[in-house]
Length: 249
Ligand code: NDP
Ligand code: 8X3
Image: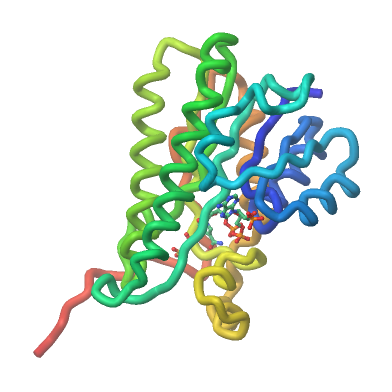
C-alpha cells in the first residue's frame, strides 16, 4: 500500500477510472459520490482496497466533518482528487437557468474548496500530501454557452495556483489537470439532459477517454516527492483552440 487517496465523484467517468487505476497502482482508495449503488458496485469489483463513502458535494456539514467522519483506519488521506463536478446547459448567459448556475458553483467551487479545507490541515501536520483537482480547458478558453461552467473551472485553476503559494515550505503538492473534449463519461448526458444530443457531441471524433485522465493522474501522483506538476492541459488530437470570433455586419 503506497497511500490512501480520496477520489470525489468516483461513481462515473473520470473518477471511476481514476479509482480503478489507483487501486491497480497499489493505493487504497476512498471513492465518493451520491449514488450509493454505484459505490457498492465499485466495492464489489475493487475489494478491500476500496472504501465506498457516500458524500454530496452540496452538503457542507458532511464535508466539514471530514476526515473524522471516515472509518477508523481511513482517516489519513494522503492524496485528494477533486474530480466531482458538472456542467449544466449550454444556453447563453441572458437565458441560462440561474438554478443551474448555482448548482455548478456549489459543486465545482464551494464543494471543492470545502473538502480541500477539511483535508489540508492533516496533510500539513504530517508534511505529506497532494491535492489534484480536475479543472478544464473551459477554465482557460471561452466558448459560447460555457459562461458559468468555464468560470468555475477558472476558479479551480487559480485556487490551485494559490494553494501552491500557501503551501510553499511544506511538502504538500498541488496540481490542476485541465482536460478538453473527453468522451466515455456522463458529462454531456448531465449537461444536455438528452442522451442522443450527448452522443452527437462525440460523433466522428476520437476524444480523450476517462482512462487517459486516469493514466495522467497516476503519473502525476507517482512522480518523485520533490516534483510538482502545477498544471497540465490535455486535448485529444482532434481538438484545438479556435481563433477569436469576429462578427461581420
Ligand atoms: P461524469 O458526469 O461522468 O461524472 C461526474 C461525477 O461527479 C460523478 O461521479 C458524480 O457522482 C459526481 N458529482 C456530481 N455532482 C455531485 C455532487 N453534488 N455530490 C457528489 N458527487 C457529485 O463526468 P466526468 O467524469 O466527465 O467529469 C469529472 C470531472 O471532470 C468534472 O469536474 C468535469 O467538470 C471535469 N471535466 C470533464 C470533461 C469532459 O469532457 N468529460 C473535460 C474536462 C473536465 P454522483 O452523480 O453519483 O453524485
Ligand atoms: C469539459 C470540456 O470543452 O466541454 O470541461 O468544456 S468542455
